[in-house]
Every structure is written in structure tokens, then in C-alpha cells.
Length: 499
Image 1 (tube, rainbow, N blue to C red):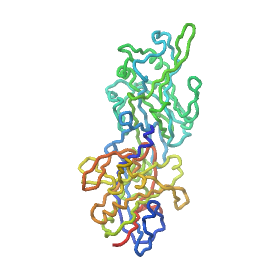
Image 2 (cartoon, one colour):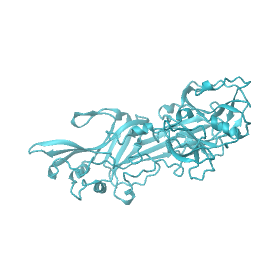
Image 3 (cartoon, rainbow, N blue to C red):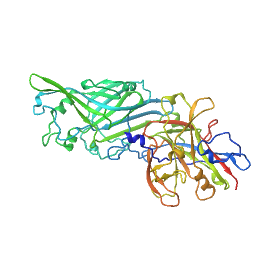
Image 4 (cartoon, rainbow, N blue to C red):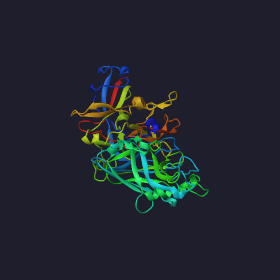
């Protein structure tokens, strides 16, 4: 989970940036990054101009999105999401499901007084998830169910060493009633709960399961063929759980599977010495041998985002961006290659949020990313980092995310609303375009989570690397002004000197 806050990797797919060269004029617009190195604009030796761009919305698909939520094998303990969004006014509906295994901390395992199974009695069994946050409306009730995964061949790949696509769900569950069901509002998950022994714990989703399932767990033993003999036998008896929201809701809730609050709590009574009956609890937890998967879907039918998809035939005034699985935008510069050579002091792609009251419910992604499509790359992944401007520091072991411009600054729109503004620094890349050493690439703009991307300076060899930008997948969406928006248009700003 801690790694999810460190996860800032990039692979964006910003396809096509168009530029229509506009007249030189002095722009009253500050440059925050590197301002001390840029000469003042005087329209005599240093000039400031805006270049028009074109923007085209598109969606990721199973073909071009191979995002996998990390688990024990990847080393990334990503945030997992659960729930339903039923009414995002711009992006429609979303759903996220969690699949996981909870197991004894070691094998062989035995409950207290297990040699006398007739003296074990279930009190209750509760599935508990370590709550992190809510993305969406915290006051709309959700109905969540827990079902048991069956032992069908379709589930044979549900193992601790498997990493599943976020977009694909091939797992099956037992038919019949669920093991448990709970109706609640996400706001309740922050409340303190009195647990066993009088401990008070907050930030939990607790779903009580059927007592019959708990009694079944009590009756298993640790003999050579018993469920608690080893991990393999346990998997053949208890494959795992599917947790889904089946009704209502307008939010996705984030959980930390390796967190201390994620566990299966089995409360039971046992005969200590007759006639004394004691009550205790055993915990099955999410450990190094536990499998997990997160499945997410979107439905855009009838939404403004869906209406903006036109197969690249017309420019989009409003850019729709949504974290995976979601939307990206291709940015094109149609006239950039026709501009004569000059000294570029600063080239930045500037974009502004289009404000709506729903943005307070469905928050913006933390970061955006920009990469380029290079059709000359023979590898199936034809996206490359922006040459010269997106760099790696071997001393710090980090990419230059900050200076590249992935984080927004806060400003105001023409109506006085607080908005986010991004300024991507692509100065060195634009300079190489004007000197003729690099082609004009189409760029891809999107809220990157973790993607593979080619890193290197063409025409040299590329290194396929993984870059992570946002700390989690699924959450985060935003609308920006497109290249032809009437009041908040995206543009390429150049500060330059003539040769």
C-alpha cells in the first residue's frame, strides 16, 4: 500500500498535437518553472506567441490497455476499488469488483481445542476490508455482496503468482445465495467499530457471512488431507471471495488488501474445561500466498463523453480524460513543422480545467501525463516518452515528473471558479523539431497509472520501461478546454528569439 503512494510511472498515449501558427503577440501569462532563465519578452529580441493545437478524444480498450493491479509478485500493493458509480453527469457509470484470498498465517493450522471438534461452535464470521478512501458520493447507499469462488477450471489461474488485467474478469462464483450482504453508505466506513476484546477500530468495511460457512471452516482439520495441512489443500477447499456492489451507489471505495484491517474474522466458542465455554477469534489474512484481482468496467452510453467520440473526424472543444480504464486525448500540431528555425527559450503545452459542480464529487486525477506515438518503432508498443524533455536521473533513480509538468497549479477560470492548470514543458523537443532533427509527433494526454513505454532518443535504441504517474488506477476524471474551445483553449506557448 505504501508503494501505491510511491507509484508514479508513465506511459501516456497522447496521440497527435496539431499546430496552426498564430500571429506573434505579447501574452500576459507567467511561466512558473524556470522563469529566471527565460529572457523577458520585449517583442524586439524575445518574442511570445501561441500555436494552435487540435484535440481528439478517444477511449482505451482491452487491445491498448494492459493495466494490471499489482500484488505480491509485482511488488506493488496497489489500492483496490469496490463499488458502483451510477450517475456521473459526464462519464456515466462505473463498477469495480474485488477478488481475494484470505488464509491462515501459517500451515498446518488448527483452532483451539481442535482435537475435540464437537466442542467448537461458531459465533460469527466477518469479512473485513481495510478502508482507504471514497471516490464519489459518500452518502448514497451501496449494497455489497460476498460470494465464494468455485473450484471450476476457470478459477485454476487464481493464484498468488498471477496478475490479472484490470479490464478482464474470467472468474466464476458458486451459484445460489451469497455468503453475506450489507447495505451501507461509504461515509460510515470511517466510523469506529468495537471489535473483539473491546478494541475500537475505524476505517473498515465489515460484512457478516453465513454462520454455516463459519462452521464449515471450524470443521476442517490439519491432517495430511485436511484443509489446514498446507496451502495447496486449503486452496482446494476455499478458493477465495468475490466482493461486488449489486445495487445503488454513486461511488467507488478504495481498500488496502495487505493492511492490518483486511482479514476474515472467525469468532467461535470452545470448551475450555467443562462446564466453562470460552469465546475467541481466529484471523485469516491477506498474506504472501494470497491471490487477488480487481475488475473495473465503464458505461458511457448517452453521456457527453460518449458523444465526443467521433473517430478523429472532428476536433473536440472539450477534452475528456479519465483514469484507466478510461479516456485519453490525442493532441496534434499540424503547423509546427512549417515554422522556421529559431531559439526556443520555452515551449509549454498549456491546458485548463473546465469547471463543473460535479468536480467536487468526482475529483480530478492527481497527475496527467504526455507521451508520443512513433510509427517507426517496430515493437508493438509504439509510444515513446517525449524526447529530451522527459528524462531519467541515474543519481536519484527517478524521472523528472515535476519539471516535465505532470502536476497542476491552481488558477481561476473566466467565471472566477478555482481550476487546475497544467503546463507541460516540451521546450527541447520543439527545438529539435525546428532544427529538423526530430519529426512532429502526435502526442497522447491521459491520467496515466502504470504503463509500458519506450524510453530513449531517436534514432538510437529504445528501452521498454514502466512508468507510473498516478498513485492508483480507476479513480479520477477531468474535462479540459480543447484546441478550439471558445474561452479556455489548449495551446502551445512559445517564447523564442530569432536567429
